[in-house]
Image (cartoon, rainbow over all chains, first blue to last red; front, side, top):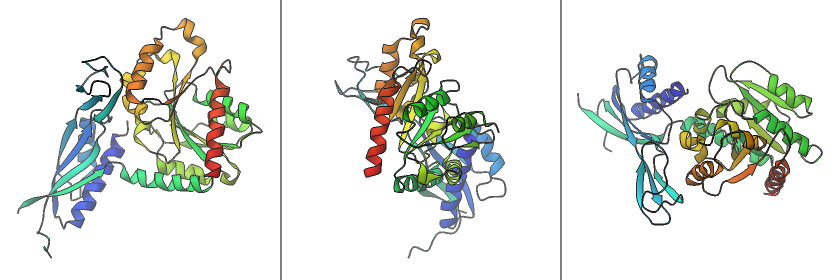
Length: 120
Length: 223
């Protein structure tokens, strides 16, 4: 699995934005991951504690927001969610669908401590 | 000490995407059409490349980057024996190729003498889907003995495909594989994806695939 690479990427993104904002510490990282992206939260958390020692991110809490996979039926326009197996439209049985959400894979925001930036 | 929230909204693995964009620009500038070939272990990736070389020798100049988790050159040796340049990349145990590894591979190939580059990814249906390599098309081989449920179990890899190869169709009479169920899953995830049914053992269906790829190569040369 590539959770280590994913975790390093999350750390690097967080550190870059934290430094730019003048942070002295990162307290929280908010991550958004869709149902269709393959990442194991527990593995990311495991690597996180190992690779963030001695950085601004040490001790920061990871928050995972999981986005369900939502489909729009292109025949009857019904919207539906699947959590387990990919299924045809529950209303009309069509397999013609557009994926509305579930592929998200990004760092949404971080919470930091540090002096407020000069508003100028 | 007050805490404040800093909005980011940055794609995880964006660093990989940036190198992938560099690879893509290099390949496009040289008029090379490039494929990221993915599949589970044993689906027939190397056999498919060898069949493609056999059909295209004298028509196109191919180059191959072989990705493997172990420091073996079994696959690259076969390509070189078939008369095309190949480099083997050892991922050091990693489950996928990434854009940096491909960049290193490109540096070792005679790019000016290549029309079609095939990158054979590590055998895996999960991880390669997350790493953009900068190629022009993602191509997946699904083989009949793997079973008809793979689109349902590995939706992510089916989402990003331009081409789907269904291999080992000569085994259909011997394996319980419901083609309609398989196609339904593919159609939901990736409607209209270019699909070629082939057998690398018998050669069936290979010419339809190579006709398509030749047209793509010519299109990229003139683009």
